[in-house]
Image 1 (cartoon, rainbow, N blue to C red):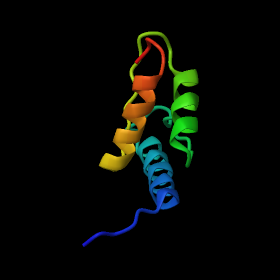
Image 2: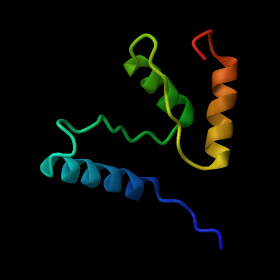
Image 3: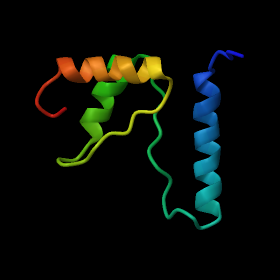
Image 4: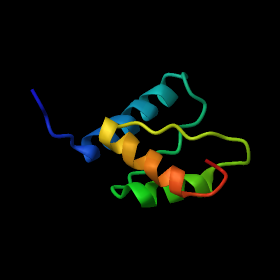
Length: 79
């Protein structure tokens, strides 16, 4: 059964999980978690945050991954 996703719920789950992990000592500092609904804008913001040599992990549906892949293939040599 197809269930439409709710990105804000996933964002809130990630935030609450990160807070719990910090509180329980599993993480020293919470990760940077940014909510961005536009794939092109999300890719741009992510690239701006990367240090040289770092990679980027994209999660989501196959459709989202395909859209990000397409954007990367259109991009520069960093891809």
